[in-house]
Image 1 (cartoon, rainbow, N blue to C red):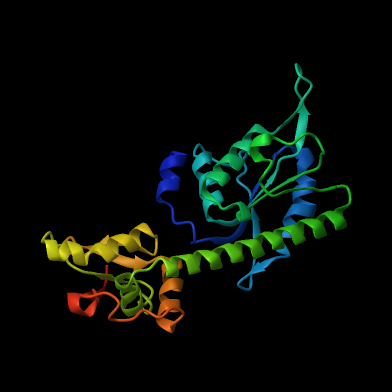
Image 2: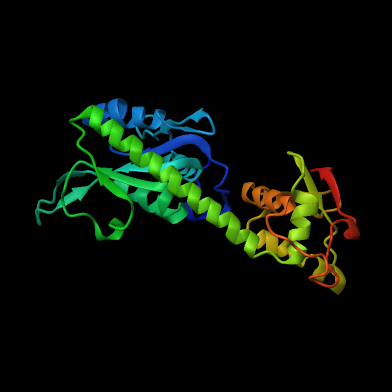
Length: 281
């Protein structure tokens, strides 16, 4: 696996294509194995998303190759949630202050860079002073010595994270709909709402002023991450496909969640009038 710089990776991944797993960041010291196997893993496996059981996902540095960083950021980006055990692991020899696992905290930083707060949960077994930088991130203290209680508490908190994420995604959908122009709505409704999986749509990327103006809705939908470029046609023109968010928005627009009057914008740009076509890339 090719090693990728975190910034480059996070600039290019599409975060809504998520796997049925929860990324777990924690120490791989042997004394933490029972915590993972007997509490964290069962808590995660007790939750289903779209009728699929979730699995815990750890990137074990003891069993991974040279590109451990790429595996970590890939797992963080494409998991349903990010869970980190940030328990104190010792005391600083100079200040006497508690410290936490540096590798885990690095992974927390990566998660905060690319995931919503509702998709991140920190857990710990101590009541030491918490780090200021992450004090506002959802976190909870767990007594891992009481396994039944710990599993129940962690399961309930993870379920709460999923509920909050659903509310956020619902809000994101409605905000996206509210931001659409008549031209953008028409493009989503008439082309992308029913575009079959694996099929793409495109129009010639002309340079004349009229064509540039006609392509503005496409540019805006790209900026809003409602469509994405997935390839190009033989002529070199880009091929577009809706993102998961874009498909949801397109289907809701088509169902009439928001009424878009055809005469609300003169010279409305419609896919049919521009000779759009649906083809396989």
